[in-house]
Amino acid sequence: MAIIISNIRAESKEKAVSAAFKTIGISKNAAKYAEIYKISTDARHKKLSLVFSVILELLNKENEQKIAKSSPHISLVAEGEEEIKSGDEPLKSRPVIVGFGPAGMFAALTLAQNGYRPIVLERGADIEKRTAVCESFFDGGAFSRKTNVQFGEGGAGTFSDGKLTTRINDPLCRLVLKRFYEFGAEEKILYDAKPHIGTDKLRIVVKNLRERVISLGGEVLFETALKEINLKEGKITSLITDKGEIPCDVLILAAGHSARDTFEMLKAKGVAMEQKPFSVGLRIEHKGENINRAMFGEGYDKGLFGNAEYQLSLRENSRAVYTFCMCPGGVVVPASSEEGHLCINGMSYAARDGENANSALVVSVDAKDFGNDLMSGIHFQRKLEAKAFLLGGKDYTAPIQSVGSFLGHKSPITVTPSYSRGVKEANLKEIFPEEISLMLSKGILNFDRKIKGFSDFGAVLTAAETRTSSPLRIIREENRESKNTKGLYPCGEGAGYAGGIMSAAVDGIKTAKAIIERYSVK
Image (cartoon, rainbow, N blue to C red; front, side):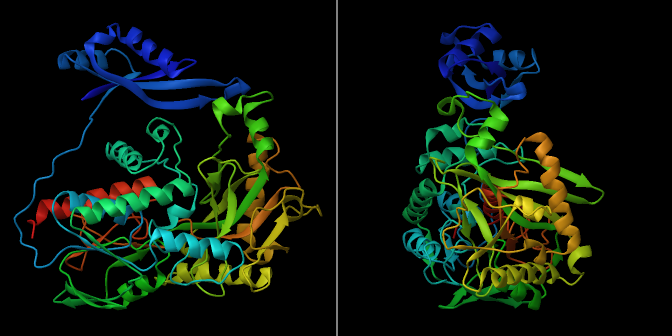
């Protein structure tokens, strides 16, 4: 165990550590180690200050228990990895993982570290080829259905901001951060309150993680798509891929939220699934300096505090509008995975040094909006993406509109759109049902009260943001196995059990752990 001392205001890391020892009343010689656990920025009333949490481990473990009870700002936390004890049920074949995004990567790593030699199937290309294909598409090149922002090594998160914030409070989050650092991320992710890696650094991290899995006996098969699962008496016996058949009695399905053909196959096989709410909307771009000034005030030190980040929400009855996946200094990129459909996402490099700040601006939707059929949510997404593709000119040019025009005031765009494939001005309200457009407008106006200038008439809106989360949940039991399909372990964001890189990675670890505790090493 270790102690975390929170709410320390200091000018530097060194002063924060000294203040932590002063707070608990012991000398530095009484600790095995002491380091920064978290750094956050307090920007209330435009008076910026740094707030630290310090983690330390004492030589006298009994003192830790006493000190942790002395203040609400002091707590105990488990450090280090938990040993996993293998089960005794025999495996007929090596465990298979479908999808090599955060959930699949960390499931594979956990299995490989414990001697289970997993086989990973990833429909897209490895990160080197994937980067070339995606960057070519960003610059106006051909679209690839198989390798794109949604599919390929690292998952959708690799071509995003690489944000590592999460709402889950799980000790495994610390382990995930340490793994990312071990495989090439910057050390600051270990203590930033809002850590991010950046798409350029993530490409290094996922390659290094893959190489570790392979070095431990795992196997990663790229450009190999799952086509069908073979069942006997409700249990998986093998998998059919576009490269042939693979024996399988344990499958971790971490296919991602855009694996629509996989959802359709599972439905045909009778796998228990249910609809799940998600959100749709637009990307909003402001000049980054305007957001920084609005949140931090004039004269802030960008070198010390970085770019401002925001997370805003408004709820009216059962409907919510909120910002999501905010990218300071980022760009808007095409994120389509099907021909004739346009969806977009935000992406940042590690430096976050772009001119604009962008964020998803989305509205929650559910069966009331798209119907009660299991696949209705997917059909709804496709309908919006097809309209955006049409408005853009049918060549992945993005339809855009000024915030002022969207709100009903004819206004020119004064923020330069960052979308690199080309843009075309259009009436974005033509894409959405009226109720969603109305909620987007209410959100823009409400958020301006919280961040002055959010409703800047010259800011730019880009369509359409549709892949915020999975529209389905593959139902699983407490042991993480499918409700009605033995050997199937739904996992991660695509299965409906995570919402971002961190929670997906943690779900991957826990799912692998459940398999290890049940089965013996083959």
